[in-house]
Length: 332
Ligand code: GLU
Image (cartoon, rainbow, N blue to C red):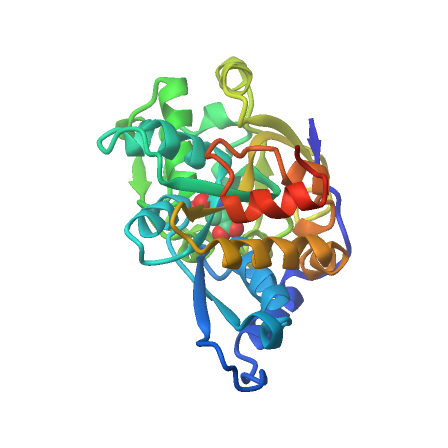
């Protein structure tokens, strides 16, 4: 069981901090070596991938005078798009859900057409994400099984929540026609759609607390809904990258009690041909500054070094990460 701890910090303040850091003027001295630019594919700006990528770049860029690597983030649709962009060589790193990583490596679900993939490499595991179902209070949705007949945002193509929602729908024996309407809105648009009455419920696989769910619960009366039942228990039991999650109450307006659902790990991946030096330096920057990293967003406050080197990493470790983990004795 994953317990999400809560810190009295505003995700909005953290996002503002990350934005400032990202657009800080380049103060590194001129280099004899060419600057080595790397990009991390993230998610919507109101999610947690975007500040996670920003935090990693911040820690890496602090040492730019020594290693001449310059890191920046790109917002994206999420996990599936990040993996596709890594494999096509458009970006160097991406943050992806552990279920999406597993599916990409094994050629399953959204990756069935391209078959198993041996080019993806894992770098580290970051924090936990919860499959979060938010419903308008006036929609009378009290559990996952109340969704049939409602207007539901199932997530945009390319997002991780869309991939997981399709798996949930399959497990429940649902199709798109189970709902009165299905919408494919981006994560950044769904909170407003919920509150202006376009949809009754939205799903988001995301770390907590975050700006998007704060928006959905602050702008109108909405609640976090339990996602459970025999089908979900089976899904969690049969797939090691899923785990039951219990989210404490009081994180968002309107949800005072605990919310029980399931979740995945948010993981960092790269292409096999990403530079060993860059991956090594990035890994080192995060691990050697883990205390700072934990402070950069409330969703990172409980990250654990041991779990970061092992959990949810189905792609082989990138040699740059492996080198650092061996050096530190984290791995043999
Ligand atoms: N898990 C979501 C996805 O893969 C992104 C969550 C976030 O941006 O924090 O699409």
